[in-house]
Image (cartoon, rainbow, N blue to C red):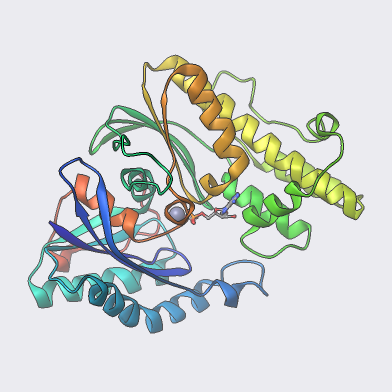
Length: 339
Ligand code: KG4
Ligand code: ZN
């Protein structure tokens, strides 16, 4: 079955055609992408109105290109229903509804967060021929600009939320900290670049920032205190110290998440771990979580960076495994949709 998938929950306009293979992996036949990110750089964050207006202009060319690249008819249409920005979601949802009605094809609504999880069913580029897609039960850590969730995927369509952030999402902590340093949005990659330039005393840097809730007996996280501590430090730093601070922030975030994943793996006898969401693009975090899994003899999955940050292929992948179509007239974009 070929699925045309559409993702417009934030600043991106993305369309993909995906197909499930016998092995269980999801093949990406085409993937086209446009983003209004450059328009948001001066403002230091996404301006919802600007994003939605740009998506209205991009959606038809992006869809056209995605379909042209595969040159074949699709069997169903999947679209991100939420969570996200209402204006942005509406562009994707209303377009998908119109297509489903016109072509008389099934319409599958997808939760954006579940989409991030299913990005792990797309084969990464640098894996060997023995790579197999994940199989539930699996522990998933979803880390993005707006969410930080630790989820137990019991089977397809059945999951339990084990923990989440009590305040800021981890991506927000990266973004606001970068902003305090005068760096553009999105802040995660900028903090990483700066951290990679740090050549000073790493042990000392590791003591610079707090790690909220790290020793508490909970799978919840909290990042607002860390962000506040970072901003306080920024006000008294030189250029060399900015690199140290960026390194310290990456370290604190990686330590907190690694500790929570370890605690969850100790509580639940799980053999598969899925890292996902935009923040999963962070190299240091990927390495630290891969190490935790290696120690616990748990299979570690993480998508290619292009499938960590928002994309349409992951929405198609989630639709393959959570295929529940609905009447187009009944589908409503839902900015606050939970898991
Ligand atoms: O999943 P995503 O693309 O959009 C949302 O659903 O929110 O995640 C965006 C977030 C932003 O906060 C961005 O700063 C962060 O992912 N991010 C990173 C990296 N690349 C993107 N954070 C840390 N390191 C990175 N390399
Ligand atoms: Zn996302």
